[in-house]
Image (cartoon, rainbow, N blue to C red; front, side, top):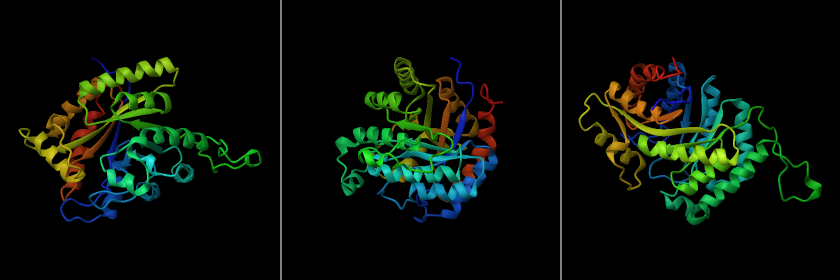
Length: 317
């Protein structure tokens, strides 16, 4: 089944969490990764977002500000932000300011989270309300970033706005694989980003999204995947090793089937990613599962032996 998207966008997750070997956060490594990714031709660089995490983790938007200051071309963004944990007016102010420092380069992925329940408890957001809260915050933030006045302040406050307004629209992509999350994405977002789904599962959800988007009369819609990747010279057992390494990164007690990980020698990586391309995946955000001392070596292999071949997919040459 040929992909009809025309072009593949390839992004890279930055190592914003502590090194899995020494337990230390390395800001220099993160900025070096962003620079190498830009030089190699990646389209975007992204960070995750948590208030509380089992391992030390840099705050997403402050980290992106540093990345914006040290890059020129590459897109920057979250993949994904837990917007339910954030105050929407301050979030709009932060995103509007960040967009000024990276005009036309800011892209925000948003998820509902929930795997770390303690961070929701700490901020006072009931887990059961996080999906509804994400929808409400996204509507409000999108409106504020387009210049709408702050609602609920009365007739005398019609000029109360979040300014400056970004010169370029900030795309928002929603995550989640359940039907309610897909409905939310089709209705409110500019795209959808899947996570740990097979190419077949991705294709089914993409079809649902396209149908709902058409019914709602929405604009063209991005469909992509966040894909954990492990370059391993040994193909046998590579996906299992990748799944085990991912567990050391997340430390959330959730075990995912090894078949959902992209792993093996470069040629096998390209073959596995091509299945997502054939399923209609127009955006891939690659997350290296080796977050230890081998991270930069993995990045070099990805940049030299995988990325050029992804550019050979239809419409990317």
